[in-house]
Length: 452
Image (cartoon, rainbow, N blue to C red):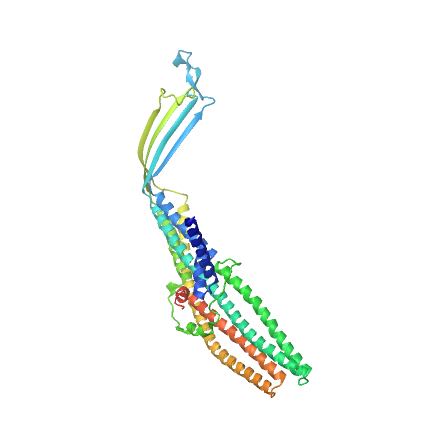
């Protein structure tokens, strides 16, 4: 009983620990790390790697000894008839006697052994399978990068919406206090009904914006769960809810530099070019001879009755070994046509590689320009936000002192909310621009790993 109590205690502690981890707010890096093991596309990519490894083993196995057993059981319902000259049996010359040859039942069984000695095409297939495995590994990296990219986009979007919600809540609280104050003044005959209505409209508009932001937040949070591979009904909270202070981290190392070989699309195109070259070699090797060794050992028996399990009856063994040489001579010019096609495919792959390189350079440079513009925009937008906030606070102070009209206060509040919205949109654009820039030059994963 003590043992079972101990097991129950350990199990309860484990469940509690898992629950606490599930409730722990996740940073961007933790969300990305979670997706690396739970995203369905990454799991599928892992399966494809396993398949490619098995294909390598399959091609290697084709060059190893092949041993097969075969056996047949024949029931000759009607034996074949042969015509023999009648004079062999003492009959009349020029006539024939029908004779049936064979046995009603026959059994054959044996083992065959074959071993390739020289087959360049088989060796080339092994190289091709290994290259396909490398392509599967590169595709896995591409899938991981795309998953991390999607998680980053939705993460930043969710955090920005949360920040907007906080601002709207603060503004709504101020509007609520102001509405209570102006209502009290109206009841005491110190304010006009139209001023109360204006504040009420402003309050209702802010509350409506807050309600919409809350809906957008939970929708964005569910989208983040989907990209992470997390069950939608699970609990998820984000740690970086005040990411404003960290945008400087995204602004560092803004020099335009990259390595083309780091870009996964370029790596895949290079692998595809190598694959086309191997296929061309396969067509060249198709004209070369192949050599293999074989051997067999067989038993057979013939009976008029089905008594093959009778140990007193004879079985007859046979065996043999040999070497088989195959030399392609003429294939109706098919090999020449296939070789010409392979040569053209190599040229297409080389041209596509050059095109991919130029396209990547343009994409990286364009994203770099977009990122630099986003950096400049966020500085201007932050200054405008600070100015709008200052105007709004001064308007509140002046309104409480009676030197600011209701309409001026509401206008300053609306201007402040617009400035907040513009700032957060530009902040989101900055984050997205940096992520897209890093992804374009193939350094997204290393960039995310360096985030603190």
